Image 1 (spheres, helix red, strand yellow):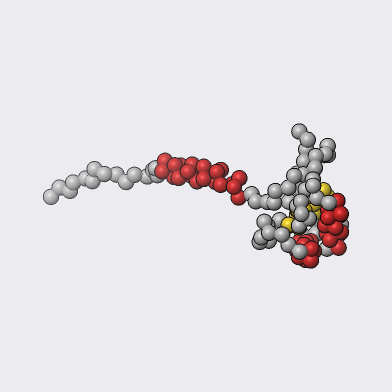
Image 2: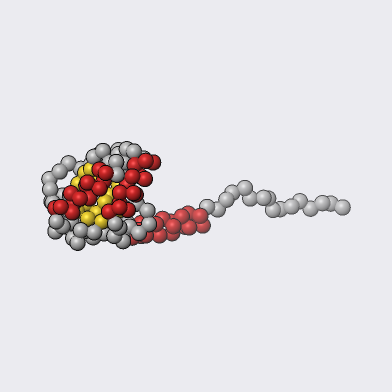
Length: 140
């Protein structure tokens, strides 16, 4: 009895082409959806020649004051819904307790009353913010 040699040898290679195809599809999906995820309140910022912030800092906490003087904050749920001044103060205080070096910025609409922006800055300082910056739009 002669034993027949197995003519098939085990293949020791992995075909990675299907994995590359899947990764490219995922990359395209993320590239399309990433700009759509960014949400915010639409305000028309005043223009000013100012130096941009340094990029090595933490991501800032932004409080927005719209044309009607309503306050929005980019922390927690409901970034698109206006919140009360007391809620702004509580949320900012909570963020500063956890991350004391967080920069605090105010985005005020061009048409909003100056007193509303100052009131927002007073709330932020009462919450414990050591300094408050203003966001402007570059004229370029």
